Image (cartoon, rainbow, N blue to C red; front, side, top):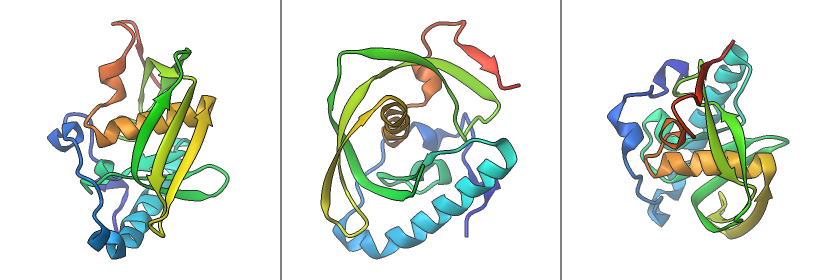
Length: 161
Protein backbone atom coordinates (compact mmCIF):
# COMPACT_ATOMS: atom_id res chain seq x y z
CA UNK A 1 0.00 0.00 0.00
CA UNK A 2 1.31 3.44 -0.96
CA UNK A 3 1.75 6.08 1.73
CA UNK A 4 2.01 9.86 2.03
CA UNK A 5 5.79 9.71 1.54
CA UNK A 6 5.24 8.06 -1.85
CA UNK A 7 3.84 11.27 -3.36
CA UNK A 8 6.22 12.54 -6.02
CA UNK A 9 7.41 16.03 -5.17
CA UNK A 10 8.03 19.06 -7.35
CA UNK A 11 11.18 18.43 -9.37
CA UNK A 12 10.69 14.67 -9.77
CA UNK A 13 11.09 14.07 -13.51
CA UNK A 14 8.18 11.60 -13.59
CA UNK A 15 5.76 14.48 -12.89
CA UNK A 16 6.68 15.98 -16.28
CA UNK A 17 5.96 12.84 -18.33
CA UNK A 18 2.88 12.26 -20.47
CA UNK A 19 1.14 9.14 -19.17
CA UNK A 20 -0.03 6.35 -21.46
CA UNK A 21 -3.66 5.20 -21.27
CA UNK A 22 -4.88 2.41 -19.07
CA UNK A 23 -5.29 -0.61 -21.35
CA UNK A 24 -8.21 -3.06 -21.17
CA UNK A 25 -5.98 -5.86 -19.87
CA UNK A 26 -4.88 -3.57 -17.01
CA UNK A 27 -8.43 -3.18 -15.68
CA UNK A 28 -7.78 -5.78 -12.90
CA UNK A 29 -4.97 -3.51 -11.62
CA UNK A 30 -7.18 -0.41 -11.40
CA UNK A 31 -8.82 -1.33 -8.08
CA UNK A 32 -5.41 -1.63 -6.38
CA UNK A 33 -4.26 1.67 -7.86
CA UNK A 34 -7.49 3.33 -6.70
CA UNK A 35 -7.03 1.91 -3.20
CA UNK A 36 -3.56 3.47 -3.08
CA UNK A 37 -4.85 6.81 -4.40
CA UNK A 38 -7.69 6.85 -1.87
CA UNK A 39 -5.42 5.95 1.05
CA UNK A 40 -2.82 8.60 0.24
CA UNK A 41 -5.47 11.27 -0.37
CA UNK A 42 -6.92 10.55 3.08
CA UNK A 43 -3.44 10.97 4.60
CA UNK A 44 -3.03 14.30 2.79
CA UNK A 45 -6.40 15.47 4.12
CA UNK A 46 -5.37 14.63 7.67
CA UNK A 47 -1.97 16.30 7.43
CA UNK A 48 -2.69 19.33 5.22
CA UNK A 49 -6.48 19.81 5.40
CA UNK A 50 -6.96 19.71 1.63
CA UNK A 51 -7.28 17.12 -1.09
CA UNK A 52 -10.26 16.55 -3.35
CA UNK A 53 -8.57 14.49 -6.07
CA UNK A 54 -5.29 12.86 -7.01
CA UNK A 55 -3.81 11.76 -10.32
CA UNK A 56 -2.07 8.39 -10.57
CA UNK A 57 1.31 9.80 -11.69
CA UNK A 58 1.58 11.68 -8.38
CA UNK A 59 2.16 8.25 -6.82
CA UNK A 60 4.44 7.06 -9.61
CA UNK A 61 1.62 5.12 -11.29
CA UNK A 62 2.28 6.33 -14.80
CA UNK A 63 -1.21 5.82 -16.20
CA UNK A 64 -4.12 8.07 -17.21
CA UNK A 65 -6.13 7.58 -14.04
CA UNK A 66 -7.70 10.13 -11.66
CA UNK A 67 -9.40 9.50 -8.33
CA UNK A 68 -11.77 12.18 -7.05
CA UNK A 69 -13.68 12.19 -3.77
CA UNK A 70 -15.99 15.14 -3.17
CA UNK A 71 -19.38 13.79 -2.11
CA UNK A 72 -18.52 10.25 -3.15
CA UNK A 73 -15.55 8.50 -4.74
CA UNK A 74 -15.33 8.50 -8.52
CA UNK A 75 -12.71 6.97 -10.80
CA UNK A 76 -11.78 8.50 -14.16
CA UNK A 77 -9.96 6.11 -16.47
CA UNK A 78 -8.37 7.71 -19.54
CA UNK A 79 -10.19 11.04 -19.07
CA UNK A 80 -10.13 13.45 -21.97
CA UNK A 81 -11.36 17.03 -22.01
CA UNK A 82 -13.54 17.19 -25.12
CA UNK A 83 -14.70 20.79 -24.82
CA UNK A 84 -13.82 23.84 -22.74
CA UNK A 85 -15.65 27.15 -22.40
CA UNK A 86 -14.06 30.36 -23.57
CA UNK A 87 -14.87 31.86 -20.18
CA UNK A 88 -11.95 31.64 -17.75
CA UNK A 89 -11.58 32.36 -14.05
CA UNK A 90 -8.60 32.82 -11.74
CA UNK A 91 -7.91 30.89 -8.57
CA UNK A 92 -5.16 29.97 -6.14
CA UNK A 93 -4.37 26.35 -6.96
CA UNK A 94 -2.73 23.86 -4.63
CA UNK A 95 -1.13 20.49 -5.24
CA UNK A 96 -0.18 17.45 -3.18
CA UNK A 97 3.21 17.43 -4.92
CA UNK A 98 4.04 20.81 -3.32
CA UNK A 99 1.54 21.12 -0.45
CA UNK A 100 2.82 24.36 1.05
CA UNK A 101 2.78 26.37 -2.19
CA UNK A 102 -0.20 28.08 -3.83
CA UNK A 103 -0.14 29.11 -7.49
CA UNK A 104 -2.52 31.58 -9.15
CA UNK A 105 -3.77 30.14 -12.45
CA UNK A 106 -6.55 30.61 -14.99
CA UNK A 107 -8.94 27.75 -15.69
CA UNK A 108 -11.92 27.21 -17.97
CA UNK A 109 -15.24 27.75 -16.22
CA UNK A 110 -16.87 24.75 -17.90
CA UNK A 111 -15.44 21.60 -19.45
CA UNK A 112 -16.85 18.40 -20.91
CA UNK A 113 -14.94 15.27 -19.89
CA UNK A 114 -15.21 11.86 -21.52
CA UNK A 115 -13.84 8.95 -19.50
CA UNK A 116 -14.20 5.28 -18.67
CA UNK A 117 -15.54 4.31 -15.25
CA UNK A 118 -14.23 1.44 -13.13
CA UNK A 119 -16.50 -0.94 -15.09
CA UNK A 120 -14.90 0.19 -18.37
CA UNK A 121 -18.12 1.97 -19.37
CA UNK A 122 -17.91 5.20 -21.36
CA UNK A 123 -19.11 8.24 -19.39
CA UNK A 124 -19.40 11.97 -20.02
CA UNK A 125 -19.57 14.74 -17.44
CA UNK A 126 -20.07 18.46 -17.95
CA UNK A 127 -18.21 20.12 -15.07
CA UNK A 128 -18.38 23.74 -13.97
CA UNK A 129 -16.55 25.98 -11.52
CA UNK A 130 -14.77 24.05 -8.74
CA UNK A 131 -15.16 20.64 -10.38
CA UNK A 132 -14.01 22.04 -13.70
CA UNK A 133 -10.83 23.52 -12.27
CA UNK A 134 -10.16 20.37 -10.25
CA UNK A 135 -10.40 18.09 -13.28
CA UNK A 136 -8.26 20.47 -15.36
CA UNK A 137 -5.59 20.32 -12.64
CA UNK A 138 -5.66 16.50 -12.50
CA UNK A 139 -5.84 16.16 -16.29
CA UNK A 140 -2.74 18.36 -16.53
CA UNK A 141 -0.89 15.85 -14.31
CA UNK A 142 -1.65 13.13 -16.86
CA UNK A 143 0.03 15.29 -19.50
CA UNK A 144 3.11 16.15 -17.46
CA UNK A 145 1.92 19.68 -16.67
CA UNK A 146 2.02 21.17 -13.17
CA UNK A 147 0.11 24.27 -12.07
CA UNK A 148 3.48 25.99 -11.53
CA UNK A 149 3.78 25.90 -15.33
CA UNK A 150 0.41 27.67 -15.65
CA UNK A 151 1.17 30.51 -13.21
CA UNK A 152 -0.35 33.77 -14.44
CA UNK A 153 2.84 35.73 -13.77
CA UNK A 154 5.87 35.88 -11.46
CA UNK A 155 3.69 37.24 -8.62
CA UNK A 156 1.39 34.21 -8.76
CA UNK A 157 3.14 32.17 -6.07
CA UNK A 158 2.63 32.28 -2.32
CA UNK A 159 3.19 30.06 0.68
CA UNK A 160 0.22 28.41 2.32
CA UNK A 161 -0.17 29.87 5.80
